[in-house]
Image (cartoon, rainbow over all chains, first blue to last red):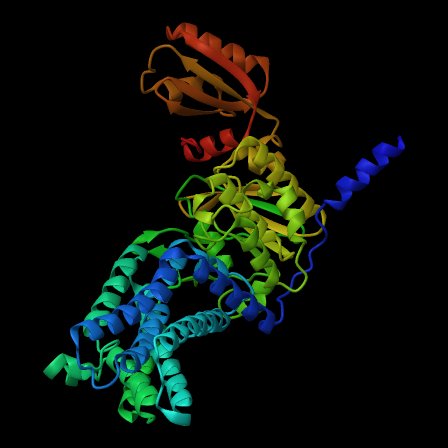
Length: 270
Length: 298
């Protein structure tokens, strides 16, 4: 055998399959990988980015411009009243609509089934999703707050504003996230796509998210018990008035619990 | 295992030796996937018991999963994920994965490394699915129709890869309806049909152990219905005659010239004109045909 042949032989051997060495990676590493992957895919998806950033920013800029032109009274400076609502819209779009659509197609493409046979446990999968949701929402909030500040936003809530807003956003994420998973886990992917967008549109216009509930007249009293109205209330109370809206927090918590219980019972993994 | 009132897998009993390749062979709808998914812990058996590596696949799933590799029949990735990215992700879930690049090279995934999953061809999705199943270096590998939809080149590569994994000490269970695949790869073949094992053995035992040969007789005009029985009487008890369709018969029996001569004589006597008369070694295809009276691949 010539020297060259020997080299070729060795090259081929390096490519041969080594013996089995099974085992799971540490849970923390698995969850980190899952969260990073979910975040990357969410940011890569054009439609979802439109939903996550473009529509909320347009709602903010358009709302502020319209209230100036048309002289609409929102009970305060337009940018101050609208910014918390637009932040609530960002939470709604990511933790409900984007999550539901993404999860619906994950079921359709057998991803959830496949990961069900991997070392990643179900709670690791869920944790990865939740971390990805918060990661995307931090980016959304950064963009929206920057635009709002450029429009002259001056949050009046004082030192309690930020923790109250964070708690409201957290509870809102849990409530909408569990409802989004419930929808994705029960309906077909196409039906989820349609329904999640429809719900988003309905809540955007009539759900007490962007505009304060008072703008809806008598219907406003009902809206306070919807997760959308409660999230809007919670963020506005914190960022505009610097107080914690206990009713809103309780309503969001209740939706989160109901959504989680139903999703836990009815979510089909395949 | 029952779905509604359809029994998919019924009283199926098989065991797999460590370090071997076992093929579960059968036509579509025979219960192959249900059998595999019961081993993988996706389904709870309604009766009987399953132990995989000594573990209950449902109640001890968390202990079992890190040790096995699973290739689903279809799907298993995000629709927008790139092939290499997906493989790298699955690798990160394991303690000591194979180098991703090694599998990318071996399975030719570099040709579609940046294409989103939903735009991969069926064969590319299959290759990625196989890579995802083996990247965690499992001691036991379940592959469901690994080469369905692959071109011949990819099929050979897959067979080589699975052969190497077995040589390196892994145990492999595969389902297939390709006979060549079972003959090339498997140490042990279980032929299943309608949820039951109808034959088990090595490919050699199933096809050649009894020193039997097969004769395929194709004729120009359809046979009268009584032809198979009449031919069998002529050939004697040691022979089996199976009608493949109205113009061809499969004859299984002693591999000698007498049988061939008797078949010709029978044709002359009954005024049947043979179009072809071929003598060959029994294949798994013939075994399956003989056992079920049906062809495996339509």
